[in-house]
Amino acid sequence: MRIRVPGKICDRLWMLGTEESCVYVVEGDKESIIINGGLSYVVPDLIRQFDRFGIEESRIMGILILHAHFDHMGIVPFFKRRRPELRIYGSARACEVFRNPKAHRIANEFSRELARRTGRTRVFEEYDLSWDGDVEGTVLSEGDFIDLGGATLRIYETPGHSSFSIAAYMQEPKALFASDSIGIPFREIIVTSPTYDYTQYMESLEKLEELDVELICADHYGYITGEEARDHVQRTITASREAYALMEKTFRRTNNVEKAAEEWTSTFNQENPGYLLTPEILTKVNEQIFRHLARELDSATRE
Image (cartoon, rainbow, N blue to C red; front, side, top):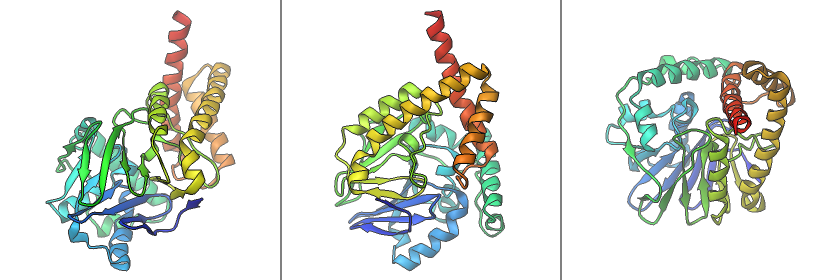
């Protein structure tokens, strides 16, 4: 079952933010943590939701960034300036992105672009949301734990969607936070996104498939419970193979990365109106996938 309305999921776990940009709060006995940095424009939603659901912001001592794309780290600058004591967790590569001026420019540009699309540009006038080089990260890697007291998160490295993706698993209630390393539950479909490296993406899925999962806490379009949650990683594997095979056919026919990406984006948007990313951003994402696919095909031909 897919649930897209913010609120309490179970003991110690909340979904906040919006349907298209979900942020999770895990409450421990010692402290609480935010998982996923979401889109920057959800900041006022979070402040209202803290009050509405009785979540003590003062107990939140960290934000865990599962990968450093703009739509997954947008709230960090605001809350880090509001609460300088906050620890910002991420992979080693993600922590480098936090300090990268080019990444800041892209994050700020794309965040405003999506805010314009959703009619929320005024948020940038009312809140200090821009990345500006003042965030340092705490590095996490495979096998690390975050102990909140009565709630523990184990970290897995899951590259493929990005070079810096990680996932977190919470033993009780068997919740997996894997961001876009697994399929995005848009409406009734699964959107796969092996943007950085298809082979690594599939290897990461195989690693996550070994976990005992009852909750999939996705960064976009809510969380998944029950049997669908238990099957979600395997269904993502199947969907990824099918999508990549179709992308290969598209590329072989067009023999051009840009044309293939434009065609793929156009078809996707026609079949799935209302998806989060603008056509321009989605085309850039698809270009990265097709470039990797082209390199794989070229390598196979040379062998």
